[in-house]
Amino acid sequence: MVKKILLAESDIPERWYNILPDLPGPPAPYLHPGTLQPMGPADLAPIFPQAIVAQEVSAEPWIEIPDQVRDVYRIWRPSPVYRAERLEKALDTPARIYFKYEGVSPAGSHKPNTAVPQAYYNAQEGVKRLTTETGAGQWGSALAFAGALFNLEVTVYMVKVSYEQKPYRRAMMEAWGATVHASPTDLTNAGRGILEQDPDSPGSLGIAISEAVEDAATHDDAKYSLGSVVNHVLLHQTVIGLEAKKQMEMAGEYPDVVIACVGGGSNFAGLTYPFIGDRLKGERSKTRFIAAEPAACPTLTRGAYAYDFGDAVGLGPVVKMFTLGHSFVPDRIHSGGLRYHGDAPSLCTLVDQGIVEGRAYKQNECFAEAVRFARSEGFLPAPEAAHALRAVAQEAAAAREAGEPRTILFGFSGHGHFDMSAYDAYFAGKLEDVELSQSRIDAAIEELPRIPAGV
Image 1 (cartoon, rainbow, N blue to C red):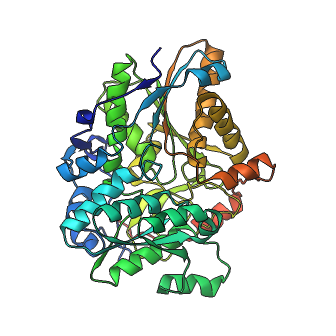
Image 2: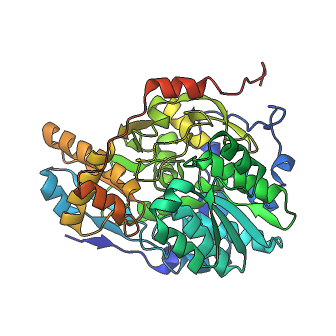
């Protein structure tokens, strides 16, 4: 039995896959935050470079990857696919389990797959500085890494509770030359407004996005860089799934179910969209897709499918998505990432149409699966990836009960080497299960923007 399936550097994809043309219907348009009318490419120009804007609205199914980007990808791509036969035994399942491992990147996660092209396109257009937000720190680390390669300054607004919980993520960003602020800050109008309302605010991704967007929009030499949710980010991440399709072919397999964790959707889309494309084209109609999210931030499973602001203050585009409301602030004791109040519009379309199934899990059950995985396969998962492992365990049990040798492929989005304080809390029995109350969801949804009739 082959343990890992490897590709050559020449197998790094030459094009990204754009799922938008294959969706059953056109995605809902982005709306301008001021007018709530459909946005055009020109409305995105103040915060994104032209090449990124073009990709964001592209209807082309394939977009060429620049040679300079593929050259940087060679540092860690192609990433391996592993057969998890020890996990299969631990789960006592007839299922064959494979995982695509993205922890091999310099930043330790899948995030550099989009950070590198974003840094490249900005540098090509003469941008000097990038601003961004980060939650658990994986995205900020990735952009700091990419910025160093393309001689760009990087300013990161890091959610305050993560800034305090994950000091080594901050140190990693600073090692690559980034400036990191605990958000909310007193450096922006958005941050000052939040602090006036709650001086002890733990922050949220929505708040950090507001600060980063404001910073970019008020400085001519800066642009904003986003780590998930929007179309061009999900596009860049499809290198994961395109490689995985080749690797599964080499194994003589095609997955019956594909699983990945979801915060904003970039990791999930990166692995699944090339496979979902097969299903949308009628080539593989029986493959199922499971999006695993935290019960502490259950956007896909309990959010409203509606238009909402992408950030807390309302500076960025208004998009149709499953949302907990742009004012949503996750509990401090939610230890992992996956904290965004909404999800990628294209992913939400697929969930709404029943092509993707969302499942929400509590912290302790996810960490239990992470520990089982580490003790069977050796790799220590990030808390985010642990959510996918919980879904894998459920699917493995279902295969055992049905007596079916199903093929499961899941995304191992990053390692947990910077998350040891969360593992410490789990082993000490201090990791609390957080399940969002319906009253909080109802209150947040009451604040959704009122969209004019006819939009």
